[in-house]
Image (cartoon, rainbow, N blue to C red; front, side, top):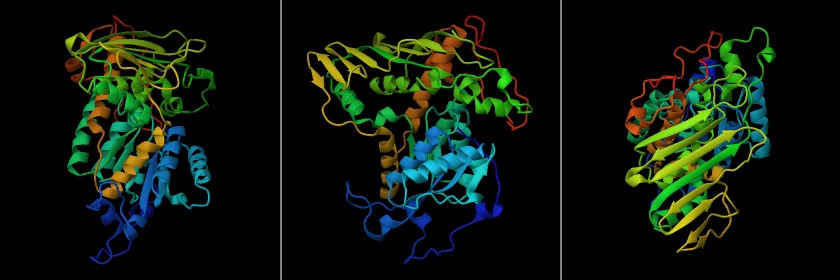
Amino acid sequence: MAIISRVGDNAIREKSKMAETPERPSRRGFIRGAAATTGAASLLRGAETTQGIKVGLVGCGGRGTGAAAQALQADDYAVLTAVADVDQERIDRCLAAVDERHEGKNKVRVAKGRQYLGLDAYQSVIDSDVDVILLATPPGFRPQHLRAAIDSGKHVFCEKPMAVDVPGVRSVLETVKQAESKRLSLVAGFCWRYNNMVMAAMDQVRSGGIGDIVAYYATFYTSPVKPMPPAFERPLGMSDVEWQIRNWYNFVWLCGDGLVEQAVHSADKIAWAMGDIPPESCVAVGGRQIPANDGNIFDHFEVNYLYPNGVRAFLGCRQITGCHRENSDYILGTRGRLTIGRGLMPRIEGENPWVFKGPNNNMYQEEHDILFRAIRRGEPVNDGVRMAQSTQLAILGRMSAYTGQELTWEQGMQSQEKRFPDGLRWNMSLDVPPLARPGQTKFA
């Protein structure tokens, strides 16, 4: 989860004292320079490959811990040197887990002075002379953290989703342009884009294996991710902000709701199949079936997206215990149908039968392998536009369900509704907006 505070000015200002000369370039100059080799498939060779890449982690929860372990696995000379969170115990667990994963390799080198706590600690990590930033806090913080990292010239792994509201999406799109102009790599945590089975299946779609797409049905039916505890469990004296951050999944300003935080993976696969062309409009339903316990997210959605030529995409998601569970994709075409997730391998039934053959890769590791390979080669990769558009696709569905209105893509992109609060402070009071009521909640 995580966020952060600035401590240790001396540590923040610590720089390498190695002089940069033509004979002996600095590590930072190497990482940011045009350090690509001429061989298209080869990594940098000789001494260049031993130049260390310093990694900073912002958000030390489960996803951040996994991302850090995978980043260090992606490059022999990647080391973790700075971390940030709001909870020291979470930092301790994270560092222990990552160190255990890389036991004996001395890849976790996070001194006590580089373990930053508080809401602004992300900036301390960025300022600590790292080369790569891993962003894994609750997504409400993502636009601010991403902007700060790119402003400071860092390569970024950015976990999904990239925002919880449309102003956040617009901010991310502006930051993406900055990353492009600075030739910085930006890899998104939309992990299915890096899954070799799904990549092969989408290649079949693009090559006409099922003909023209007529409809897409995606499911994300699962159990509650992090149920909201009752108010009486809140420790005496704990501020609104701390209580909500510690239960971040239950508040729209932090998670964006289940459609945006979890089922956004399904939205991303829909976008992928449709060539990352936005839909014309969408209409959605949703609500809350089980008590919210002072949270304000829905526990089920059904979204109907309208694409050009009358093509429809349907996304159903639910997070209720005791119900049917499924995470699948059914793509219907004029010449066949592709199924992903309902069975061991993606398959096409119809005029051109096809089944994926071969082992399944580790898509989470592949994300980082690609990021660090791009850094080593000096050939930036940038997932920015599609990661922002997939996030917006889910946000559009949420806004339609909350208001009960049919919304066009253009309407959605013009939304002024700002969910993430201004001037956030750890001890401030923060009222929770009521649960949305379709037909009464207004589009803004």
